[in-house]
Image (cartoon, rainbow, N blue to C red; front, top):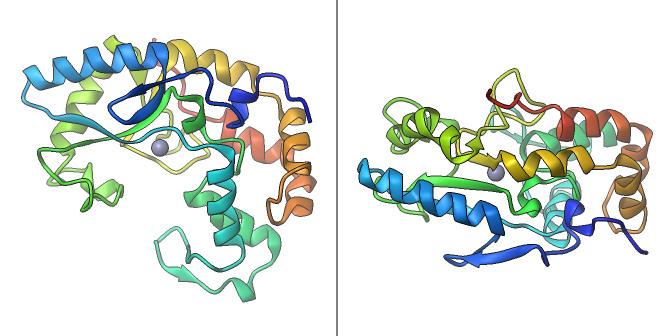
Amino acid sequence: MRVASPHLYGLSSAHLVEYCGFLLETETAVAFEKMRIAAAKDGITLEICSAFRDFERQQHIWNAKASGKRVLLDSDSKPVDINEKTPEQIIALILLWSALPGTSRHHWGTDIDVFDSNAISKDKLQLVPQEYASNGPCHQLYIWLVQNAQQFGFYFPFQQGLSGVSPEPWHLSYLPVSTGFLNSFDTQTLRKILQDSSVLYKESLFNNLEGLAQEYVFRVAPAPL
Ligand SMILES: [Zn+2]
């Protein structure tokens, strides 16, 4: 299957460059490096912990959760027995914590998860909101980003009440490039890609793909002025 703009759906990494062991979109890498240096001057050790994830990787995570091979958590992070759930309920639970394959902003290379590597080691980091809230190891970093990220082109797309995806105070997006990617994202193309994939619960997804895309792709926090 030929797909227009395959990089929008995690099917190509040709638009990315390597930066400190991660794949990033070119302009994003340049802007991030400037921001990292500025943060370091203020005593903050800004580091990336997660960047690009391709469609295959997202599909692997999705299918592991959808089949019960990987534990499924509810909104309070409590394990759920999937045998008691309908496909629609399982889909909603997976989408609390994981992206539908093809819809992760991470594969754009413009979106990254960051942490303060001086305050907590990567192997201890769980990427939970408490780590970025007051008294959390990454709180100072978070405050610094709220005050400074915008001047480097970055912002938080996943915020309480403003995005379909749960709040992620560690997830930054490079707006000058990601805005164009979001505007070019096409739900019908996503449908074709999913049709040809091995993603579980495809049929249930197709019953409401427009609604899911609206909620989990297009509903993000508005760009700061
Ligand atoms: Zn993220």
